Amino acid sequence: QIVGARLTSSFKLSWSMDRQVFILCWLCLIASGICQDVIPSEFDGTKYLVDILPSDFQPGPGPRLIMTGSDGRKYACMLPTTAESNLTSATEHPEPTPLPSHAVLIKTLKDRCFRLRKGYWDYEVCPGQSVKQFHMEGQQRGASFDLGLYDETLDEDYEEHYVQHFVSGSGGRRASVTFQCNHAEPEHHKVVSVEEPQAMSYVIDFSSSLMCLPRTDKASRSPAHLLDRLRSTCIPRNEGWWQYELCYMRHVVQYHQEGDVRTIEIVLGRFDFDLNRQLELDGKSIVHANPTYFLQHYVNGTSCEPLLRENRTAEVRFECNPGRPVNYIRSVEESPTCHYIVHVVTPFVCTHHAFLTPDDDLQHINCVPIQT
Image 1: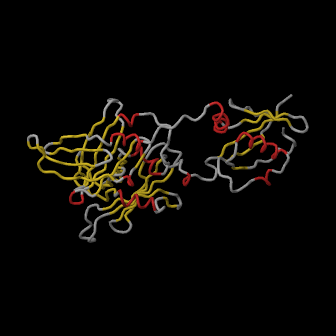
Image 2: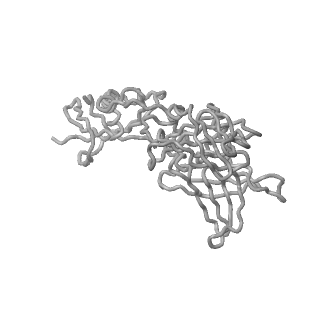
Image 3: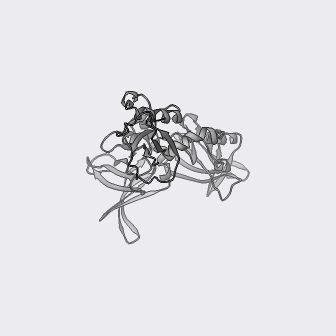
């Protein structure tokens, strides 16, 4: 019951306990005017704002609680949809049993190897073991190189793909194998492509039906995971004579184009996996500035000579803009010489807690007096 009639103020409360009990108790406390005494700052969860609205307010559809005040007056309190789903999910929709992670599923292929022939060379991927490059001479292997041995500590398990890294190959060679689903061929496992974007560094795409299984578990929602949807995307910016292009987790380039031909192209930086992984591990990838941004470094670009005896570098700053459902480069700055700052605006990082403003996760509970 609502035990008092002082319903003229709105108060905020966060909690991590049972929401159904808390909503009911909280409404009672608000009604008795002592809500301020029960706002425990250590609680950590969704924030709710209770608004007592005029009796002529027309509520929309949705769940509601009927409460009775100590004076006998009834109130219809509309719960937000997210709150209702939390209240009912435990009893009406029990959590399904999560499937194993992609890492566990792919490791069932550990005793198998898969080949791809590309011109003179054959490539052999043995998931969870090794990657090799060799040339076949008749039925025998001729020239052969180890492209790396599997290092489990470098695993990347995302929601839609999974990456294994292979290191310490012949002459320092290394490879990354990205496992993805191909719905067009649901019953298969195969090496799709092999590229060498940098000398002795190989990028391999592997298609497996194991990656097509529906997932109920979620990968850690770091900004890098949230931005994973940009993985095969290039974001352009036109500044007149110069144009810019960010190809996520690949490179940043500056170029001039005449017709359909790029007559000048300068690489401002290439994505460095180890550098950016260490940045995240050190807790330095999220920068709390105005605005907050997620930082990635792109290094080893085109030489800056004769201005400087070093290569160009770029830092890419991903900022949140929930109001525009598009990804775009807001600006490109060169500061200092041959070091570039690329400001990218994206809605994808907005759900990460570091980008939420105090009221971003605010839910309203509207209470309206019931006319009798």
